Amino acid sequence: MIHIFQVIGEPYKYEEKEFLIGGESYVSCFCSEALRKYIRESGGNVKLTIFVPESLLLNWSLEEICKKLNEKGMHNFEALIVPSIGEYKKDGGYVRYTGNVEAISTSIFLHFLKIRPETFYIDVSTGLNIYPLNMLEATKRYLTYRKLERLLQENSHVKAYTVFSPPILKDVYSYQVEIQPIDVKAFFSLPNANIDKIVRKCPESFRQKVGRINKEKSELKRNVRKVTEELKIAFNAIRLNVPLAFYELLDMNLPVEEIEKEIVDFVEAFLEPIEKEKLMEGLPVDGINVSNIFYSTALYKSIQKFVKTLSKPEIEEIFSRFSTVYRIKNLGIGVNEYFLLRDTEQIKETMKRAKIEEGKEELFGKLKYGENFSESTSAKRNFFAHSGFLLEYTLLKVMRKKIYVRWLENKRPEIKSWLLDPEKG
Image (cartoon, rainbow, N blue to C red; front, top):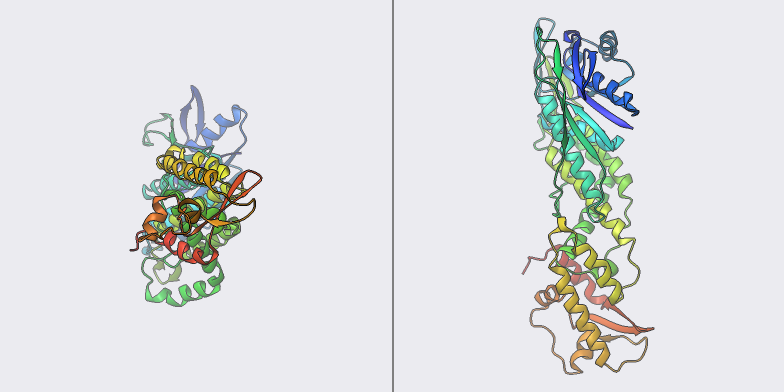
């Protein structure tokens, strides 16, 4: 299914024009409708979605708007309401919409998350400028999210395009339509996400509502914090080359897709305005933070898929699986492979020289230096300097010619604290 998205303005103002697409001519009141005809002629299955700014509902019902669009030649489409901001005429006076422009982009972004389009076009040729600009911003955030979902798998296939014509003028009939691909870069960094900060500053009139929403979704917020904490450990374990954390500390089995659906509902509750006389009061939503929350869940899902490929903490598997991850260009951590190779080879060399029974565990330090080995004076520094295989914390054993590693159980809480805050002294 190919999707086309467009924001409309006042529906009665649109007039028939000629749109030229791919060398073909299409007559329509809307560029998006012309594009739909063009794609259908190529055999594509297309769905058209119209975003309706809520300010239009001051003077028309949604049903009346859709009927007017039908009269203008647009049929078989979905109409969705998005937030407005600014002052608009009604009954000889004005109604003011408060909030912020981030509410617009966030609303559209959430819709993209719900329907997950794989190939889509955004028509930026119509609507007051803040709406197509925010639709473009929502598209970029969605593309970033989808790339992060497959960051360790390197094969996101989502495609998005902008569609635009020259400014539509009353006395000009024919317009050449331009279509341009949209692309974004997704980097391996830990999103700065905070489920408690959906709103930048809560107005007094919203405090009761915001308190109620937060109370109703307290379990969701706990689950999001679990995702955030586990992601932080996983992210730092990859970034700082501590592969054993994936076998010893991390489960990565939270139902993150279900959690995402609940987050969408949670955020949408904050987008609903409070109606007063000549005022539609909206909350100043922190759209960047909302995006970061979903970037976190997306990155979690990518790492979760990787974790499912892991089996046992055996030296050859550890090097094979994690060296593949370290080679991913977008991560920018290729040097980790050299350090991991050095440290796994050191373990293999130690086990060659050691005289240890099959299946018996022994501390790495004792196997390497004997009974009199001394512990590190700076355990945390040496831990990160040697791929997490700290001599006094790491147990080794041989089973069927394979070397298995694990940490001392009583040291795992300390290691977890290191991975949660690597820079702490």
